[in-house]
Image (cartoon, rainbow, N blue to C red):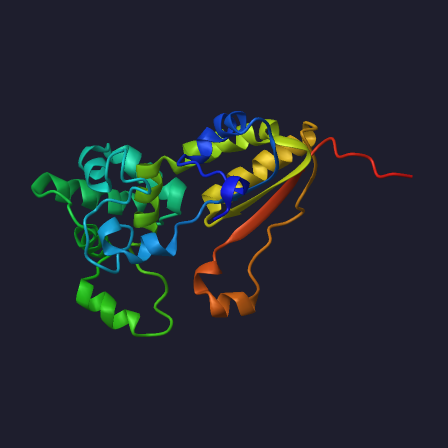
Length: 244
């Protein structure tokens, strides 16, 4: 229905420069939404959520790559603990990693429930105990939430894709063009913040957001999944000078 006004590409952020070349030049504006789709989270068969039993997949693009089950069957203990710390700020990174390694030696981790139960046990909880605690309003996030986040990032190579995109953005923007990035956890936001500041110091950008922009309380009430969203923007150097 949009005709030639819209051009769709099945690709990763890391392919941005190739897409720009295929479209015949740079962009006036770029928006990167680094979050998951609600349709992905809510479909148990995609394996992203610890809330419902499903295959331990977590691939954003199911046409390529290895699943979370395959990754956890082969990852080195040190690499797993590092990912839990650096990609999800998991305070019990070593303990959770050791529990996963010990479990996979006995039986494969094949479902989301398998992984969630291992994390709960590593934190001294049973599923029944957590459900009882979760009924309280101050229960906090699910104990497996950080582990699922870290594993998902590894499965999809999200940080590598983001780093490549951040490096390519200045060359993909026309003079005065703008980039806005929505991130959803501290690891992503740190990378975006640093890249924009480096670009500003290096003359690639003429302006960047002074601080992170968050959803308003009203938006969070109507859409709780907006709560962790963090928006930063930058403007490419070389804006046309205003007329006198």
